[in-house]
Image (cartoon, rainbow, N blue to C red; front, side):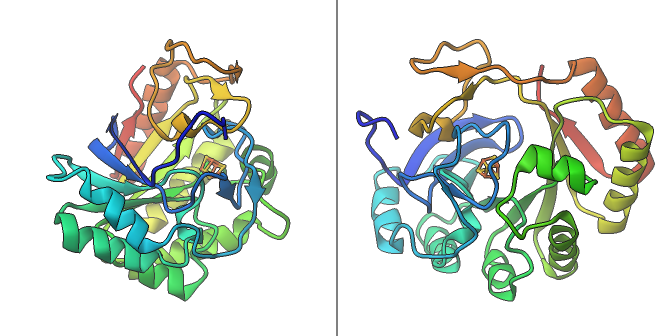
Length: 264
Ligand code: SF4
């Protein structure tokens, strides 16, 4: 992290096309930590690549920092931040504490790598909404785009997602990032998987925002694609908005699930 940046576990609110006005909670901390190292990650190259769960930020610190944002005039309070939030061993306690303190809906954005763990599924049941990342339907694309730590494969992630979708009582969204157009086989496979899951919403995105080369704390927030940033960034391949819209329409018609796209 840049030495001039000061860490707070609460940030924003940011304006999200998916969830409205969202206050961010970062249960991970100043060192970016994730079981993936996605090629498009807004945090830059992930600093600590791990699937180990631990208490990264004490729950009380998060709740104390949350107090400064009262009366929490937001649509949702989102756990995301500096990596994979389900790696926080105190996830359930954090979610419960936020709900008790703010009475706002909570949302967790997860890459799905821990969903095979019943403790994680149990903790996530405390959240009002969960958004699951699924960028690939083939192992080859999964390894190329999400670049997981050793030992993580798409079949295990998919099994965790299926199990989670069966048990979870709240609203589930699938978040999919596209860097290039899909061929017919990929489209058919994705549609068939979405049909079988029966989630509430699908969100399609493409990386229009440049990616910071190294870890930047402000990567947790939202930036306009044209906004200049005081650190090195890299442009990524992304999809034409019309292609994305057409794909969204096709998936919605084939699955009956609401599909939303990132604004152009
Ligand atoms: S899962 Fe999220 S935090 Fe982890 S590398 Fe991918 S985009 Fe970044």
